[in-house]
Image (cartoon, rainbow, N blue to C red):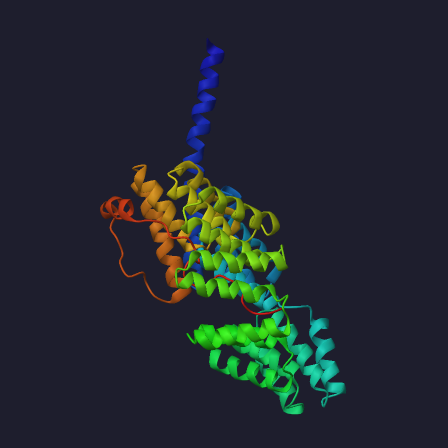
Length: 404
């Protein structure tokens, strides 16, 4: 009997040690944050590290230490800390932002930049050297710098449709649709057989709401290149916007007939199936998209929504969890819809937490708060009345529209 007593004592002590350790870690964290306010980063760094040693699951400690590493230009260490913070707390918006900031600082290896700069120094009158540097910036998502280089190239070779096209894509990525339209128009004026320029001009026109003109540019694209699969995707999108479901389906089928690996066509076709309540077909299509591209977040989201609409709530929850924990922790709609499920289960605390995550991410993306901030006791009624929306069913913003 004495042995059992000792065992119970050990268990009791182990249980007691957990809150004690948590409290110690929290004390180190509080001290570190106070030291940061006093502008003593070295001492704060040590306290953050002590907090981590006591509690390896304290996301705020990794975040704080990561910020110090970032300020010290210890970028690899900063990346490691921010990643750890995000692993522990996937909806940690500040950690995501700092991680992106760190990656921007890391950029590309210096020799890759130097190689392109030296090419310009060696031959400053060659426009293609500027284009190559612009394309390199574009790959790093530095569109403003890319546009700068394309403009320099165009000054050296004002009648080059290839340079015009690249500048147009830069404008398109920046949301400067009128400028993009102008560049693509000039490119096709010089080279009427430039199918990518016709297609991208159609996108720029469509983004401006000039649907009739966009259709003419799509027709021109297909006249030049009848196998241009993505043109049919945009035709389908126009039909879908007008709620002509069968017509949209025909366009997506045509796109897939030309290119069976066109994931945008398959994804959009799944939306039509969902709107037609052909849920099994919609699930099959979205699963096929994810089999080819596991990071195609909208397809995963629509799988969750379809299960939600079918009242297969456990499956819906499983997919919302996959999105928020693995595929895209900043996908705000998944938090909003998962909150609906928590509310239906009576777990209003988690529902409220998810709604707050949705609010923070929405504000981070748009700079604005959601229209209404709900109190915890209002959530159940609100969510019971809400119906999840298939992502992309009436807009084109989720499709990769620009040409490679």
